[in-house]
Image (cartoon, rainbow, N blue to C red; front, top):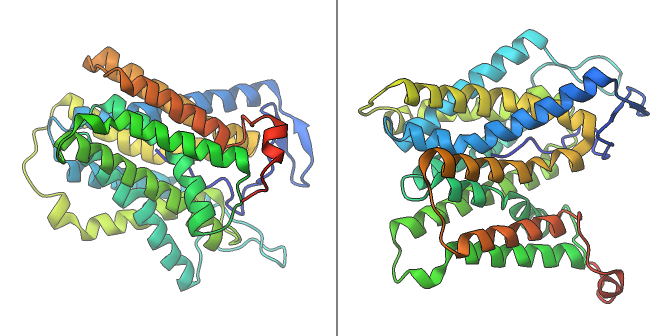
Length: 348
């Protein structure tokens, strides 16, 4: 799963300590005990829900098609966020200090959100649901963890909104090597279903990376409340899914309790409330702390796949996953090369 872009203009992009929040004037003050525990609870639930999404997709495939999974989760998520925005009516003050409109009025903004909806929801959700017909839910969750690496590549090479130093470039390289190890190309002599499924997962995370770079370049300075931002990303995708109904939603279904519960969890929790939890954690911890959910989701996804579905790994997949994790730590700046080595090469 992807989260709302931490650089959305409505959210302070300065990392805050996990135990502090920012006041309206920008000062950081210690969070109260209940507030602190609430933030931790939302972070953990968000990580569990997003990690469990891969299990939910696998269970739902027993009764519906991959297109029906993507269609239903987007529409359920859009309805959930729509209700939240309609009730709370979040606004961001304009240049004159007056509260702005709940929804943007400029046509170009809606066009940008159309692009974001495809990159954040429509294409990735279809890719992951299709891929899980051929790969395990555990493996899909590992590939989802490559999103920060894809984001670094897109932000640097495509949109040029970031510059990476040597340590972060090394992290991107290690992450790519990890992906190759997870795929295990020596196993394939042709484009098998498993290989195609793994490539579909990478297309999904590449779309997430593209979306974050696109949001930063074209939407980060727009006065849009975070909850509205999340709603527009999912809501516009819902309109796209409605237009695609004849091709995605129609067809035989075999509904039982597990399938229905999985679809509801994917839509209402994973594509609805989780984005609100993400916003709340982002406000309390800043983008650096919030991004650590990247490490929680694959752990949850793998644990649930192994424990509940009996999924197994080849020898190379855990090794590749560790390389991906190491690459993420370097690409996000959480680990750095020794200072002497890093000083030998200028920032890219």
